[in-house]
Amino acid sequence: MLRIVFSVVVLLGGAVACSTNQIEPDNSPLAPTAVIERHLESNGIKGFFPFEDNEIHYVRANMRRDDNSFKGTGTYSSFLVGSRSGSTIARLDRNLLWTLNTKKEEYTECPLKGCIDPGKLSPPKQNENAAKPPEAKHDSGCTMEVAHTSFTVKPAGQKKSINGFDTDEYLVAWIIELRDKTGRNSTSTLNVEVWTTPITQAMRDAFNMEEKYARAYAGTIPSLEKQPIVPTEATKMISAYLASSLTPSSRNAFLDAGKQLGQIKGYPISTHLSWNFDGNACAAKETKGSDNDSASGNVITSPGGLVSSLAGMFVQKKTEDSIKNSENEPLLSFNIEVKSLKIESLHDSVFTVPKNYHLVTQP
Image 1 (tube, one colour):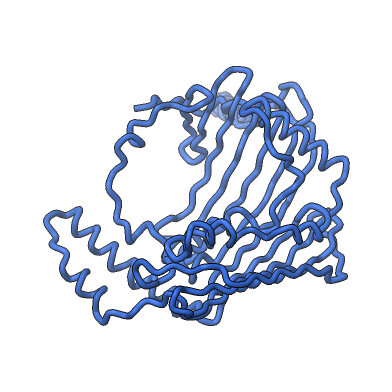
Image 2: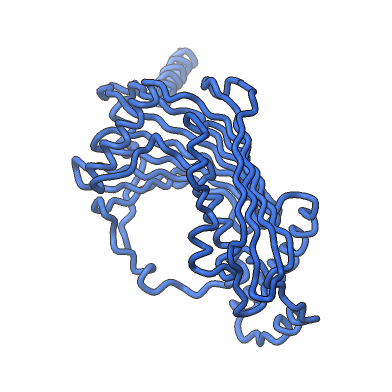
């Protein structure tokens, strides 16, 4: 008899445990929501800091959620950067900004414009070699001017479906000749393969929703239907690589594709970019052993200094390896693909903090 009672208790206990593990149904209201998803990947500059990034944006007129998943894909960047993911939820209706740590299941709560972060007022010193991607080597004080620009766009005549979008292929070739004051020349060659789609009503509805939010948050904004063919992230990486080599006027003109971009019809769904830079304009004079001398000259006075020194040596070695391994590849390659761009009916819970997350107090 006791054995029977015990078995019944065990069964009931198991049933209760199973019921507590079941996911509660989402009974929050449904409402139209713009869903914009895109995937980016890059080999970095000279193979330095290659990465992948996936972004999903959920947008309504008075609220927005941004989910981001980022990871370094090279041996060095995966070690230094690793992978990270998180979400932010902005609620205009409540003047709140929640930042979610999805790994730790915790969140912070701030006013919409953000909390004051004491760390930003006096940021800690970092190992510059460990954080900074390579720049173009050049003579100190030497700058280049744009001597000639050639920009061509042509339809490739190819069509294909990408993530449900019917697309047409365009090929872009952008060649810029640069010259320093001594007459030495360098050539920047940017090739872009872009697949575009006509803007549908579903896409326009998503743009309109995102524009309503942006206007409510920040005022007037440019049309979101007009996206740059050269992705903004790639533009920043190229600009950073050549920042100290170009005059201010040339910097402004360097990444200005001009009116010929008007030849490309539709919205870019998939973009593959490759960039090379060759020549000897402002070429640096190699100083033998300078890197080793400067590294060996560092005096280590603390455990932190030892870690910093080892990190610097690691960075130098990995940078050299990355450059050597990518000798036959473009200086920069970049891919971006739109996965989703439409209006969906989603639950309000998308824009709230999950119940199992706990609040972390700001320092």
